Length: 110
Image (tube, rainbow, N blue to C red; front, top):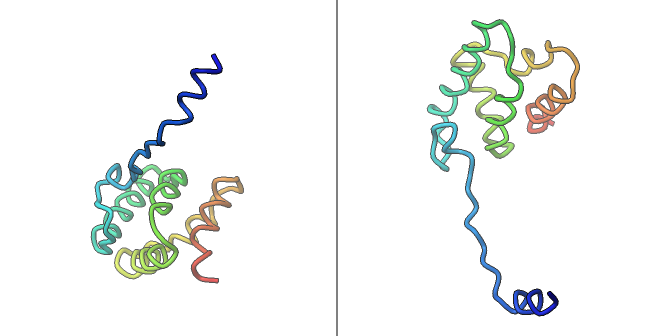
């Protein structure tokens, strides 16, 4: 058994390319404000029809962006689509998911 471990340790490591989750949300790795704001507005619109806010999907979506990009999206969605995302998240019942989402939204502002 020791031989198998030793022989494997001499092999060069193979690094797998990092797979971004961005294509799951229908966008490429480049930041496209219009497209991404529209996608976020669709998430929020869907939540408005069900009268619940899906914090998990919002958190997953926002985690794909840098602080600056999130700030652009949050302010843009408020300006173009009249969604105040920060207030919407803060209106939700206290939970770890709500805390994490609000921290992600407020972090760029501070």
